[in-house]
Image 1 (tube, helix red, strand yellow):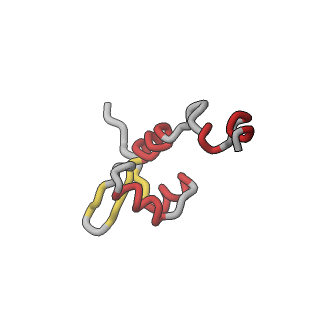
Image 2 (spheres, helix red, strand yellow; image 1 turned 90 degrees about the horizontal axis):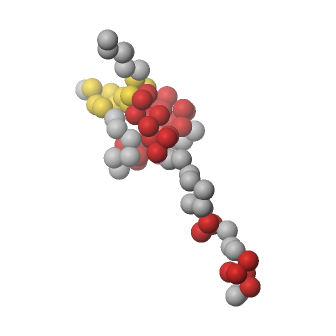
Length: 76
């Protein structure tokens, strides 16, 4: 039983991700999101975009470098 692939244009993927199409092209070029070229048309699988979203999940503690701790402010 094969499921049908849901294809997204770069514009649709950008809208879904809340990014600009230029950023989507950069992510494709960097290999962070898989994309396929059919002639002059670039398409992304919806499942690949969802995998990119899942991979971008921030884990607790990942952002500690963005805010000072009490020890950091005491040493300043």
